[in-house]
Image (cartoon, rainbow, N blue to C red; front, side):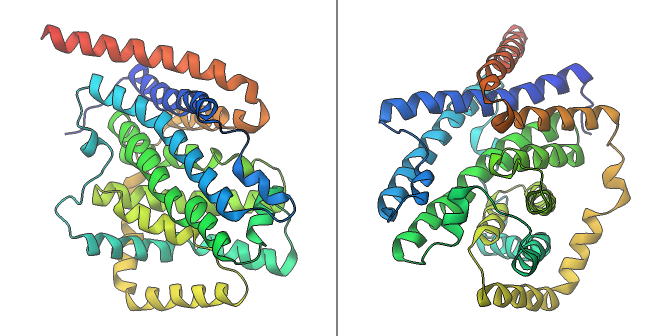
Amino acid sequence: MKQNYPLLLRFFALCEVLAVFFTGSVIAQILFQLAGVTGHPLMALTGDSPDMLAIAFDLTKLLMLQFAGWLALIVFFTWINSQKLRIELKLTLHKQSFMQLVLIGSLAWCIGDIANKVVFLLDQAYNLGKSVPWREALLHGEKTTGWWLVMFVGSFGLIPVLEEIFWRGYVQSKLIRFFSPTVGIIITAGLFVFSHAQYHQLDLYHSSTIIALTISALVLGWITHKTVSIVPAIVMHALLNFPNDGVFLYVTIGLMVGVSVWQWQHIKALCAELLHADSFVHIGFTSVVFLLAGIGTMLTLSQAPTLIFKLSVACLAIAIVVAVAGFVKRLRK
């Protein structure tokens, strides 16, 4: 039977994941300085004749340092809470074959990417708006070998692995333990979507993109919870981020439709379980408040970046005090 944690402990759990995100980012900034990383590599895309190989290398270094900042704190809190890191992060096949998990991720992509493809089609037809300059330059850049290397690192190769380990592996596992599967998945999806500061703009393009990404994030969370593995989420995330435009966009949609028809019974069963009324019984007022509070803190990434350090210190202090208190309590038993 799942333990029903009191409100205060659920608040502490949310503080921990926010502490890891924000403090890990601050640690990453220190690592950037030590490694000589200045500015974001993707900003170089807006210049004349950008060196794509250099951008790919610098982006890889930046992402690994960013992940190192998160992982250091994840390892600390996992150890002090007496949990196994591999199990906590869902780095397991959980008695399933690797190919089975890949298939699940591919089928989930057919469901979770539909809204994104609709946004792409509408944007091509009606020009819903423009994204940030570096993203526009990347999306409309010449498809050279260097371009594909940058996309592999920053879109469909390295990014899905690192983000899924952090968001679905660590954050969602922590929140599900203290809330419920449904609430944990929803809050994680909200934090994940609004952590993408490039979408923090109030226009039709970014609003529709956030809605589409939320649907994708919910599916990513659900398949991770059901399979107890992040492999399907990594596969789905990679397919979500794989670049497609022009004719290839229609080919991709055709592939999604074809796979959906081929595996319709499986997809129908997945949707029925995902949308079952019992899945939503644990969503209450406090859960909504926690979700909005989490999203509000993520908005500081673009709206009030100077608050990030203060948020990280506050959340980290709360999380460490609670974790150490729990550690001492276990030692006394």
